[in-house]
Image (cartoon, rainbow over all chains, first blue to last red):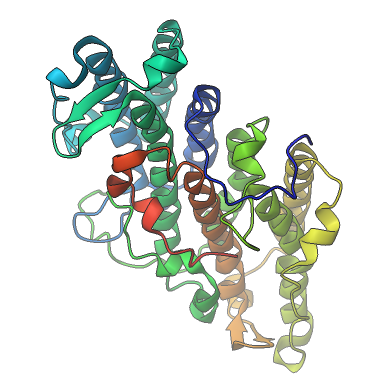
Length: 192
Length: 192
């Protein structure tokens, strides 16, 4: 392995487009391998009240790919800071997921993600493009680099959430072992 | 879908052997899809100091499959509460992973998990077997059902951890968007 294990591992990374795309490429297959044909007690149950199930999260990832990341990247490239991003509807997937099976959503996510990454690559972004600025309606000034890094980190926050939602279903089944399972202590800070 | 979405979703599940095995079967492929050939900055970096990288976590899952779950299940079936489980070496994977690539570990995990699930199925456990009791060296009395539920939940706690470790690498790259990414707030309660 070429990465030196003895390096100072606490140094934070800058967004790197190749690294971002490498991660974004893998998420649909990882969720597919984890969730497809899994008993519905794992995939349709939530953490109580109006929290989300794994099914809901996959719907949200689809909705975000369709309406958030690449549309916002184009807004930055076209309008800079002069036009804020369109607001993101965090519940938009409820409408779009209705009547679909998880397997249909997983197929849709894989297809859509692949299309969106083709669009991203086709932009042929140069390093100076990544520093271009846009305006988030709530957060204010953000760069294209930050937006693209967030696309990848958003996948991870929802993988983190899905593993927590699923673990929650066995909260009682594990009995005293729960004390050793950190996921059971996660306070739901990644939901939704 | 046959699972009624309108049911009371907060009811906790009992361990169900089919559900447990369904989840345990999928983890190696999910980690493979997420991690194989990913740039090493995602897989070999940790969260600072002596925390674990995704590489370390996969090594830990292998070590736990080899020395923890099925050996402890056999201890319960053979000795009941009269003999406590052998202690688990949480750092055992460091030795075993040395000099291996992540790809080798992913292959090893898939092969070992498949073998261990074959062993589990070959036990032909009846519902009454699942209620049999063993003795954990620190936690005291636990049932076989709780042990097997924990095997599945342990996969999820480490998927939760891996997503957090990876997100940590983009903590600075996401800029102000970090406020919206719950995984960045996760206090590391699932490590190791």
